[in-house]
Length: 108
Image 1 (cartoon, rainbow, N blue to C red):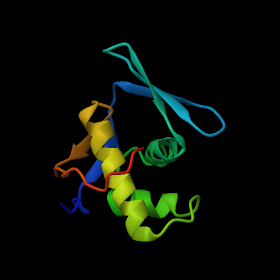
Image 2 (cartoon, rainbow, N blue to C red; image 1 turned 30 degrees about the vertical axis):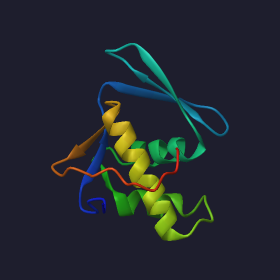
Image 3 (tube, rainbow, N blue to C red; image 1 turned 180 degrees about the vertical axis):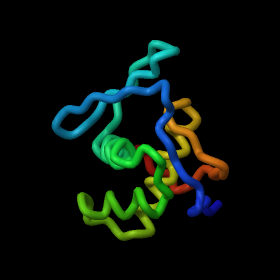
Image 4 (tube, rainbow, N blue to C red; image 1 turned 45 degrees about the vertical axis):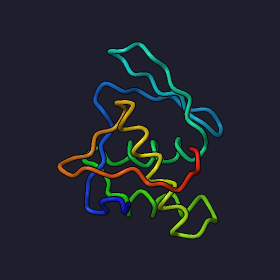
């Protein structure tokens, strides 16, 4: 299924991140659970932190393209899958629009 390109993604107000050289750790404050994010997921998180009003999928992919030399469609599919996973974990919110999980089979 295609992701909703017009949906705006926001970081949950209950999540707090800290960064290492190539990764991030995100704390879900109410649950007291820490999540380790890989390089791509941490870049997604960082891009979202710089835009507190939220970003669309295309906005996030545009930010990632400055760091990764990956074909646009592949990066978009991987980003959509990661966003959906982070949403299901309660770390992100999709503002007003749902997003179907992307079936690319890649892991973030």
